[in-house]
Length: 142
Image 1 (tube, rainbow, N blue to C red):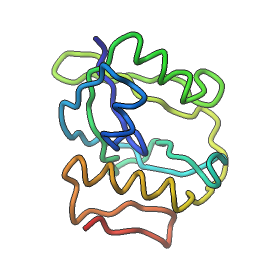
Image 2: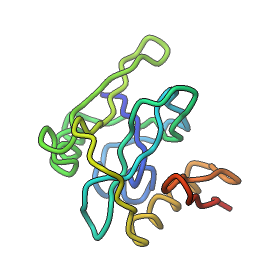
Image 3: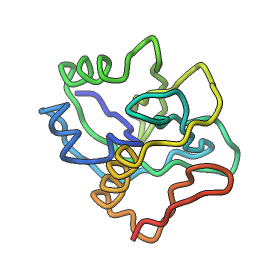
């Protein structure tokens, strides 16, 4: 089993279960010194990425996934073309997350994609927090 840090639409438990049948949600996690950013153009708008940013953090979730699940995610995330894998340590264990090495300009997400992310934030218990869409636009999770 592999530990996976999800952000963006993979926070949505139902979607994650559909993509990765063996996945098990372990809990919330905040990835420090990164920020959420939307770029590229899929599904009618930008998709979630993370980029280094001091004194920032990305709200996400830790899942336990199987090798089979990882292969499905690789396909879905267009690995290694669009996203590559990065790792960090959590309680001595390696945790994988996807990261776009090509930092293209900001593209706002579609309403549909954003709604999936909002459902994911709610699934993880992130209430009264914000998703920053761009420098001058953020959405409050209620």
